[in-house]
Image 1 (cartoon, rainbow, N blue to C red):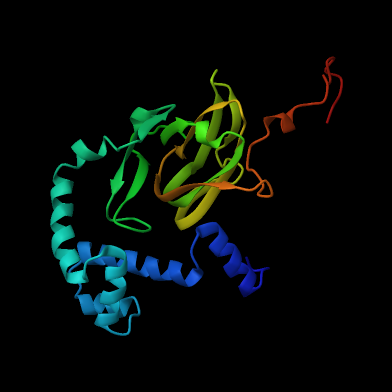
Image 2 (image 1 turned 90 degrees about the vertical axis):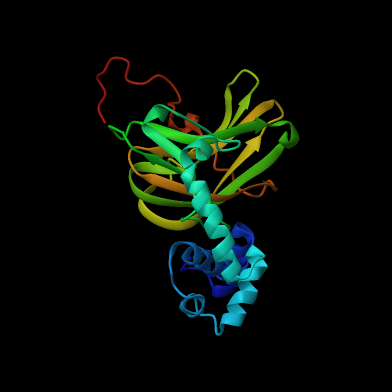
Length: 266
C-alpha cells in the first residue's frame, strides 16, 4: 500500500476489514491485553500502560466495551473457565461445532480451538501437523452449506489467518459445486500462498454462485508441516465490479493439439 495516499489506504482498509484503522488498532490492543490477563501475572495497571492507555480507568472503560467485564473480573471469571476447559480439551475441541477435518492425510493433522492465540474475542481455530511426512500431504478444516440463498450472487469470504513454520503453504479455500458434485467455481489461494511465519493478516476469496449451484464449501488448508490459525470469518454479497478470484483452469490449456510428432522444440 506504499503507492496509496493515507486517505486512500484508510478507505481501502475499512472497505476490506469492515472497521477503521483506528478501531482495528483499538480492538487488537484490547484482544492482546485480554490474553495477558489470562496467561500472565502482570498487574492490570502495567498491562494498561504497556498497551498505551493513559490511565487504568481508560483501559477499564475500553475493555468493558468489548468484553462486558472489567479487567479484574475478566481475569478471575474467564481464567477459571479457561482452566476448566483445558482439562477436557480433547473431548470438546475434537468436536468443533460445524467444522470437520478432511484432506489427503487428515490423520496426520489436528484441528482445535486456541484460547491463547486469537485475533479478536476469546479464541481462534487452528489446524496443525504432527506426523506429516512430505509437503504433498495436506488437510483442511472445513464446512459446507446449501447454496440456495446465494444463487446468482457474487460471494466474498474474508477473515484473518496467522501461520507458523509452514513449509508447504496454507490459505483459505472456497468451492462452489452443482448437484452432481462438479466444480463450478474454486479458489485455494495457491497463486498467493501463505508460507513460513506470518502474523495475523486479512485475506479474502470472491466467487460467483451460478444458478445451478447446490453446495458451497470452504475452510482453511494446510499443505505440509506447520500450523495455521483462523479467526473472524465473514461471508458477504459483493457487486459485480468486485473481481473474482476464481482459478481458471482453462487458461493453461492449449488452443489445439501441438507437437504430435515430437519434432518441435521450445
